[in-house]
Amino acid sequence: MALKPETRAIRLQSERVRREHSVPLYLTSSFVFDDAEQARALFADEVPGSIYSRFSNPNTDEFTAKMADLEGAEDGVATASGMSAVFTSLAGLLRAGDHLIAGRALFGSSHQILTQILPRFGISHTYVDGSDPAAWESALRPETRMVFLETPSNPGLDLIDLAAAGAFAASHGLILNVDNCFATPVLQRPLEFGAHIVTHSATKWLDGQGRTLGGVVLGSKDLIKEIRFFARHTGPALSPFNAWVLSKSLETLHIRMRAHSDNALRLAEALQSRPEIDWVKYPHLASHPQYPLAKRQMDLGGGLLAFQVKGGVDRGRRFLNALELLSHTANLGDTRTIATHPASTTHSKLSEADRLAVGITPGMIRLSVGLEHTDDVLADLLQALGRSA
Ligand SMILES: *Cc1c(COP(=O)(O)O)cnc(C)c1O
Image (spheres, rainbow, N blue to C red):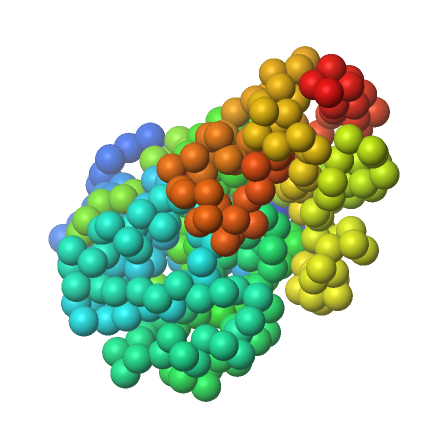
């Protein structure tokens, strides 16, 4: 029976834990062998099964299998956080002397890995403008091995054409690695466009309830074999408890992402006509400069939107201080709507010029739209706009 993704996210359970209706939690560091022969076969990778929870565990296996299924990947490795997923995907596949091409608008810690950490191991990078894949040729070097991208970007919500990126990687024999955290496989599946590796912070929409850290790297059997070797011996393992929480979260991922996207679109439309606001950016809003691309590669617009309050940094800060219902935190991907002022918080360490290069204007507010009733969220946004004038 060919099941739909919504059904598979709920029904795909590991064989070994089938009798319990909800998969039990395996809080154990190691597993007992049946006999010496089974121990040998497990270590030789001849039979499936768990040896030690740094290598694998039924809970992390279940989470990884569900994520691989949703992204259309052959295999995957679960990690303790999104950053360990990103680092493992880079360090597991690259070596000294290699070069990578990266879209300029990256998550802050990914930027630190590329600029401060990988160079210590002899791995260099060149940033490119994500909006123009045709221009990436000029960044190529004989030692280029990988392209690393995020789309939509944080917090600017600019898109990179995944089909064009896939064609670029294919024509130069490069590994295309996409951080798909913002979209989730419900909205966008980069492997369908020619990506080879997908990474996620499961901390965000995959859990969606602000409870755990987690991450996952997905891709072909061959690439994941190298990444698994790296992870097994360096130890960024996801805890079984967090994997158990995340597997449960995936059962509601489709329904949540649809609701987050519906709510975000409604708020984007309502904010767009307000006189206190210069612009609103949301992938599935017709005024987004890459709207046709957003419609092509994203099934829905997602839960994040950005807007610019008139009056610059000070008004942006007054606006945040005037919010009563919404949370003011740096996180995203929660049931609770979260407002962030990137210029004074998450991206304050960048120079103003660097901020503008990735689309962060002084009065820009990023909204991670939750699952509250949009009437209540909008009422809070409007009263805060009024009081911050
Ligand atoms: C949050 C985030 C990460 C890092 O994830 P953690 O789970 O916090 O380590 C990586 N990429 C993107 C796009 C993110 O939003």
